[in-house]
Length: 166
Ligand SMILES: [Cu+2]
Image (cartoon, rainbow, N blue to C red; front, side, top):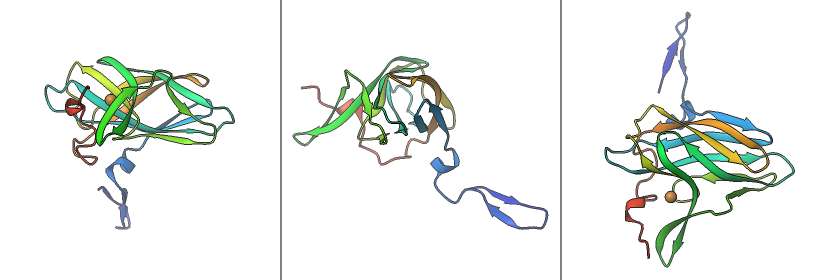
């Protein structure tokens, strides 16, 4: 929450909403709008993290997020999560994530996400991680993932360390 006092003494509330509103940022490539890429701060020793954003396709042609690069990370991939027999599992999307014309796809905890594997250092709250999104039609764009606090989303929805591998 931030306040600003002007010359007449009025107090303005700059951020009435959530912290993610205050740090909202976005990108545009072709007909795609990428809203607020973010990730979560990680504890020391963590090897993986999830990257999240919303992608809106305002064009008339379906597109596809085919691959992602993230700096300082051994490997990044587009994953989906689904509940199978009551157990949350995730897997890579071999042909990428479809972004249909006129639709918005949310990458979020417990759902589609950018899987960052092999972190070279912890992700620190308030810093950013740079990445590149590669789309089939719209091409590529450089983005920054904002690193938000560890508790910034409900916990336990995206714990890769405990996902069974059977
Ligand atoms: Cu994953």
